[in-house]
Each structure stands twice: as structure tokens, then as C-alpha cells.
Length: 494
Ligand code: ATR
Image 1 (cartoon, rainbow, N blue to C red):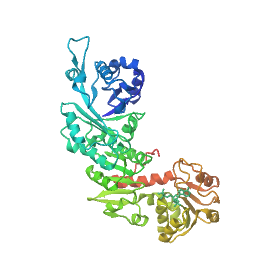
Image 2: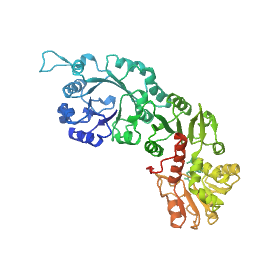
Image 3: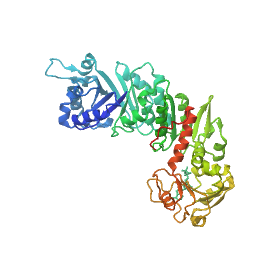
Image 4: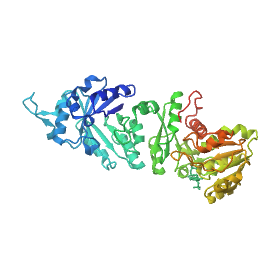
């Protein structure tokens, strides 16, 4: 179930949020601490005005909420509001039983909130928050929270891949606790939010406003990832990197899986340790994954088989499971070649100037070299250009001399990060003059038109943008992952 966290300051605002997100969510959490004081007083009526189950929560500041009332007043307000038709009420782990008894003019004796809720069939969520780590005794604490038949909720902060493994192990350790809520907050936790069912969590929270660190919108969770449709048979794929959330790959693979009705999900994993990730990959039976910076080299010791291109380039961007071992391939190599394959076959490209000598450049230079194209590499650091040129029998020079190379090449490829957002005004070779006859390839895809791209277009060159290569390499990965061609009838939003 996807649960929308309601953070409006009025009930009316929250009803509108429910309305906007209704197609994607199964329940919502009313956060009393986000309501203004007058609205808090009438919030008991909220569940009867919407058509889905509501969790009632009144979060203290120390647990990531906004409530600054004294504890007595907070619990009194929670008690009054809980008289409404709520399906669940959230009570923090450390609230004492004695603090949940209230005087009420309607009754002679003090009312026990927990008893009142249980008698009415309202489930109590016992919640534990930790914004600093995943506590070492997490399994014991979840068991304790569940001991009275309540739903344990742990929202903790993984700080590494090892912590993520602890979260995904909850299900194996505590499979007898059927109803539980497991949340990984912050950047590392996003994979656990998307794969909440694999952690054994009955639901996960979402919001448009990042009500908690790492929240995704309900629409993204449901329409892009189909996180609520994950089941035992779902094949898990993903991308590992650090950073990783800028990547467009989930927007290529998830819609592709959906279009061919393949029960699979593709998730970004923020990875600090490749070794730990391979452990997680075994635990979750991950079928394959993409690899981005800085792990394209780091994965290699864990691969049972690699292709010739991976060996040459020294980088692997695709890992698949083949008969109990991991196989590494490099689809950047073929993705780069795809838009110029016809020109190469027709021998319209015999010489190429490659700007840059980093990771992306290595795939480009090797792909061109292996097709008999004479390459010249220009790079800011001459030493890096020299190394790559020696490996691939290419020529090389410093980027400063770029004006000397105008009018000499069939293909010019820009592989540096210059011009990429946020520094979108920059051109790595401002003094290079295009004749208009070159085929120009700009690997940067954000923005789509860099200053280099625009200059080449204005000079009359045929210009290929980085989005084309990105999509082509993604389609090849999709084939390696699923065994099916990428559906030709969809256009991913990258
Ligand atoms: P990637 O994997 O994206 O290729 P990389 O391996 O870090 O990333 O390589 C970045 C490339 O962009 C290198 O060629 C780098 O030049 P240096 O080897 O001299 O560092 C180039 N680059 C980055 N910033 C640059 C800048 N401001 N001017 C010129 N080249 C730059």
C-alpha cells in the first residue's frame, strides 16, 4: 500500500491532496502537527470526509514533526482527535501507558486510549524514529513494539549499503510479524522505500513535499516504479552509483517493462561499497544492474565473465546474472556506435577528433579504433590523453591547441563534462571552427543543446545529441536484462 503523508495546514488542503493523489494511494496519514491550531481542534471529523483509511499521527519535533506543544497537551489533543473514524493511530515507542489515560467529561473513570482504540477495531502503530542511524538492536526493538499486537513502525536512517542490508534482512528475521512498517529515510533509504515489500513492510509513505527525508511522490512510486505491484515473482533490476539519483535510466527501463508486461522493477541504489552491494544483490536475487560513476571499474573483481570491450575500456556499465555468476558488458560502447553505424559502414567516417580522455572517452575511442577509424584525442591533461592514445594507437594533443585541428576530421566527439548543467554556458573548445561537413557528436544530454552543440548546428553540421546514445545504450541493457527488444512504440522521457 502507498500511504500519502498529508502536510496541509488545513483540513480542506488535505482533502485536496487526497483528491489529487487518489488514483495512486490506498491510504493517507493525517499529520496533526502540520495543521494550524484551530484545524487541529476539528480534525476528528476528517476521516468521514474522505473515502480511504486514515492514519492519525501527531509528531513531536524530536521525531521529525512540527509539534511544539508540551507532551501532556499533545497526547490530550491526540486523544480528542482519535475519537474520529480513524483506521490507525500512531503512538510513539516511548510514550508510557500511564500517559495514555485521559479524563473525559463523558465518562466517570479515566479513559485508556489504547483500550478505547482496540475496542473500536482501530489498529495502533507503535513508531520508532532514528534520524542518525539504523540501531544495532533493530530486530529486538521491532519484536518488542509488536508484542502487544500493535503494528511496529521503524523509520531509521541507513548511512551505508551495510545498513540497507540490515533493513532488507528484517523480513527474513521477523517474518512471523505480518503487519509491520519499515522505512529507510534519507538518500541511502530510497531503494528500501521503493522495494518496501521486500523489507516486509505493509506500506510505505510518500508525499510531493518531502514530508520526510527521501519521500518520493505517490505518482512516481506508482506510475513510474509500480512499487505497490512488487510481489515474490517480480524481477529486481537497478542502477548502482554515487551519486545516482540524477540518472535517467529508471525512466527508460520501468516504462519498457510495463509496455511488454514483464513483472520487473528497476531501482536506483546509492552505493558506497560495491562489495556490500553484491551481498544485497544475492539477498534480493537481483537479476541485473547498470553501473555508473564511480563504480564502473570497482565492479570488475566480482565479475565471473567480461566481454572484450570491458577489458579494453576498463569499465563495465552492465551486469547480468548468468548461471550463478555475474557477467559484465559495456553497452556505452555499442550505444555510442549505434547512431553512426551506417556512416561507419559506408566509410563516411575515417577520421575522428575526440575531445576528452576520461571514462566516457575511453568507450568512444576504443569503439572507433576497433572499427579502423584514425583517432586524435585532445584533453586538458595531456598525460591522460597520452595514456589512452598509446593504448589505442591514436594521436593526441592538449585541448589548448584545438584551433589547429579545424577542417581535418569526418567526426568530432565531445566527451567531457563541460557544458553540462549547471555550467551550461561553457564550451570545451571555443576556438575550434566547424566547417559544416563534420558529423558532430555531443555526449552531454543535460541540457540537450550545449554551446558546443549549438555552434556545430549553426555551422551546418549533422549533430547527434547525448540523449540518443543514452537511449541506445539503455535499450541494449534492456535486452540484456529482459531478453526482449525494447518496445519500439514507447518514447522514454529522458
Ligand atoms: P566521464 O566518465 O564522464 O568521462 P571523467 O572520467 O571524470 O568523467 O572525465 C572527465 C573528462 O572531462 C576528462 O577528459 C576531463 O579532463 P581532464 O582529464 O583534464 O580532467 C574533462 N574535463 C572536465 N572538466 C573540464 C574542464 N573544465 N575543461 C576541460 N576538460 C574538462
